[in-house]
Every structure is written in C-alpha cells, then in structure tokens.
Image 1 (tube, one colour):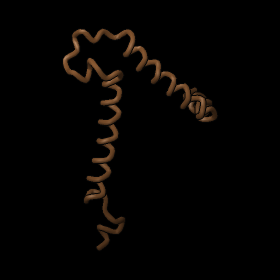
Image 2 (image 1 turned 45 degrees about the vertical axis):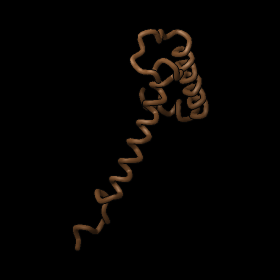
Image 3 (image 1 turned 30 degrees about the horizontal axis):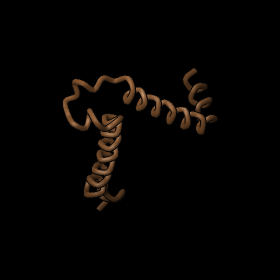
Image 4 (image 1 turned 90 degrees about the horizontal axis):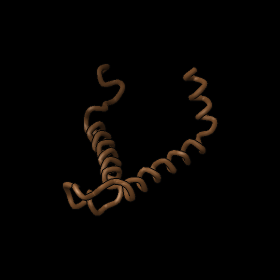
Length: 84
C-alpha cells in the first residue's frame, strides 16, 4: 500500500512540490495574521513574519554545509585506505 502511495506521488512530483509551496505560504500567512505576537520574547519574533520558519531553514542549510565540510576534512577517505 505504501509503495502505491509513493509511486502515485512520484508520478505527480511537480504537483506535490507546488502543493508544498502553497502549504508553506499558507503557514507563513497564518503566522502573520493569526498568531499573537504580544508575548514574543525577541525582537525578531515580533517583527519578522515567519521568523521561526526562516530560522529553521537557515539552521538546516548551515548544518548540511558544516557536515559536508567536516566530512570532506577527514572522515571521508579513499576506498583503498585500509589496503595500504
């Protein structure tokens, strides 16, 4: 059953991506319009719409970049490393 769902979504990948963008935009709009900012703890929470979504995205990108850098620094080695 799950395989059928995955193949159904893969066949309609462009639609799934567009729908994801629409859902993301609706969530940011919800944050701007309906979330009470009266008790915000920081300036950014109060004045930047969708701050936590943006913060999470930037943090995720930074984690990926730092992980790749760290991996190339020495964790990843040649395949014949132990043969020598």
